[in-house]
Image (cartoon, rainbow, N blue to C red; front, side, top):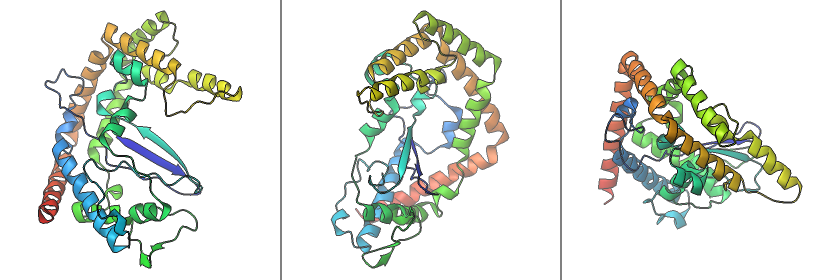
Length: 312
């Protein structure tokens, strides 16, 4: 998934539809297997909802006077919207993937993408598009300072055309509704990391990394890479520019060592088992709201299917 936040006065960023995994796990031993996923929206339904969302948004944009967007491609869907540069807003982006829930695991993937594998996956699944400020405001309704609330003489709907589409499909603004699946998946990780067995796995991984010449207490510390950030900053001060969206050679080497260490000491197998056990416990305690979320997702998928059928 991709999470974004924008900082400018009290501005908030736009959160896009999260990408779904390309293939589901085949057994509970697969590290991609998560019990809570049974209550989340299936991949095919997610694509249907996404296409319907952008189909409605295009129609809304046409009503607001953006005729050029009538033929905007929705398969693949556009990537999350970025406010145009130079408009006084700093946007921070966090990419995440269920396949990387326990960090980088494939040495070949690490050697190619470093810790940017989730970003690369997202960019493969969604089409990048540059938006003008009027288009961005009309689609998101995310206003900062003196941003105009109208375009072409029309008032921008609450949360923009994408928000209008969400209300049609889901019956509410998605941002106003807490997702219990995401919430409990986060809690499971937080609880798991406090477990003695998880901490023991971190220590074993850290010992493997020290043998490779790296000094990190946990895989998360390696991914954040405070030491790499300082080194890259020093290089910038000496005139060598580094794009933070592109993995450096040092990041790739670190990520490769990280993935190899995880494979050698069975790190992922250990922490995944803890995660699965905790998720099952959380499901038992939250069955009612999880069942409600599953119904909500199914209703949205049916609505989205009907919308696309009506326009076929």
